[in-house]
Image 1: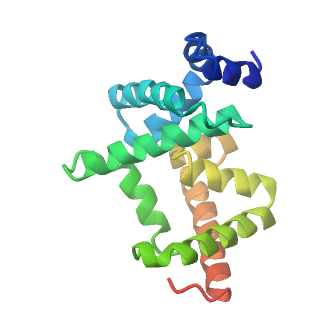
Image 2: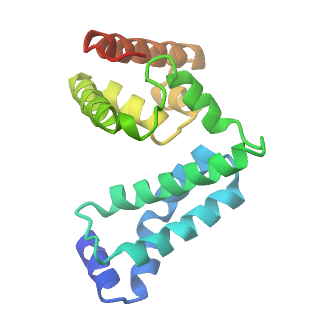
Image 3: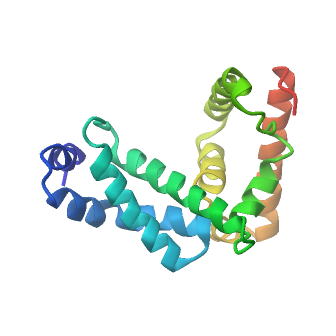
Length: 185
């Protein structure tokens, strides 16, 4: 079913919107949540919360790309869940992802850094745009979707160590670009 039709179901408050979203994007959203939380039960709950959040947000929102919209909701909900569980020291999956990026991204500094964060976002987008499509996809799959290094290596047909080195080179490239632009890390 076309995304536009599913969004129209949400707008019309037709419950079919949820079943169609689940049929078309349930596996995708489940993978995003699972990669962040490393818990099947928590991932399932997050996916269900995604449908509720979309139901509550459409309208007034009318997303152009339903997959990206639902993926963003799922990721944000999963990160919130991870933070609350992390406070209880239960999960290490997302902690590993964040620790890999801590050397090439500045630390949060509160509301006064809002402008700097928008600028950082612009620089990151420009850096990603300058990458070869395969490298860009690799970076996004690892650090946005949380795909494990082992899975990325298997898909690329290389060893886990070789994949780790590719990711390290990407992070170093990002760090160099940000430092070149004057971003304090």
